[in-house]
Length: 177
Image 1 (cartoon, rainbow, N blue to C red):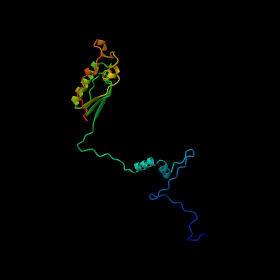
Image 2 (cartoon, helix red, strand yellow):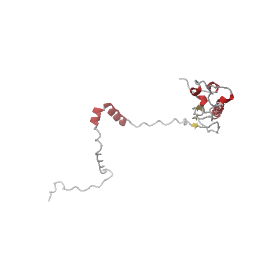
Image 3 (cartoon, one colour):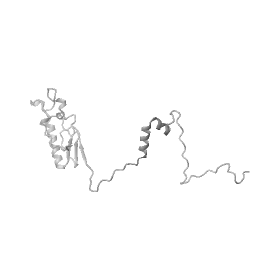
Image 4 (cartoon, rainbow, N blue to C red):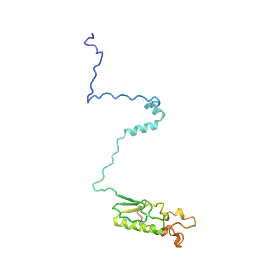
């Protein structure tokens, strides 16, 4: 019989409490992979990467500052593949046409679409940005400029090769640096 002062032979199982959760079991080591290197090993073999990783984990999370009370979000209206159509566009601060203004790439089609976009931009008070698509060949002088021939589009009306100088580019909103 054990003495009253001796430790018990078997510990009574403790029920987990909110203050003392049960210990999490260790994951068994994968026998096919080497164990990860210890921090001192990493510090010796890859000091810069180890220190940068450590500093990265120690930095506090970055929270963006709240917008000013009078600020409004920037609204971008993006359209593409209009192919000479002139749909009604919603209001936005910036209007982006992401390619394929025209069907055949003629200067007349592109001119008409750029005029429409200019009118829409003024009507909506938006800045207009145009990115040429694969149908907007007249805007890409490198495709036809140095080849001595005609590009597709208005070539069969007898005018010969046109240049980007025939396109009305409208207003430029790119700030000078």
